[in-house]
Image (cartoon, rainbow, N blue to C red; front, top):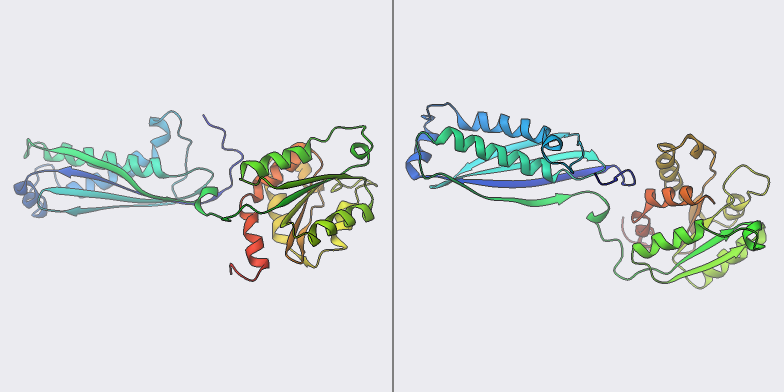
Length: 300
């Protein structure tokens, strides 16, 4: 099964439909509740609910999904019964397969209940009408914003240790469609960190991501250095990163991450470990790219 542990928990929804084709006389029997097996809609709705809950047991690659809400409705025409399902879930993966499974089994239930009175039944047009939620729901920029990665490390600056976290940050930004990425390594010195950031701010780099110096060690001074030049705090960003990391390791509580803005530039501090930097970015990408619009006075 696909690893979805890196996905964010968001509200997700899906709408699906299926159609059962039948004769006009059959529709009349349905409307008059004269089907020998009983009310087809009550049974079909129940069957659809049961099936949706069992989707992960029917489809090998489907993850178990908590269905937080689901409605199944029916509409009749002269020659068909249209089934529609709307499902909602707060989770890491979409709920479209549950909606599709629900309408499919509801259609089969109707077929089974109508077959004694109609030999020309057929099922068709099982389709997904809409799905929402997850990272791909919104487009956060039309033109890729310029970004910068600042590696804060004495040992890396001195050439004693290879940088991995900064390269991972750049790699993840490229996956988001960011091609203009500046990169620099500085020692764990407040002035060097602040000068590098302010230089990028003056050249209107939209997003600056630092790595390293967020721990509790005596040379972990990045957070204090960045705090000293921030004009506005964005605590929700650091809260999101810490909460995401806490679900993966209790050591995340040791990180002193900070985020905020200088002029129209957003600055985010990330841990120096490759996994820590990756997890923090997973928590805020791509939604972080909405910040620029807000800084410019829009997006409220």
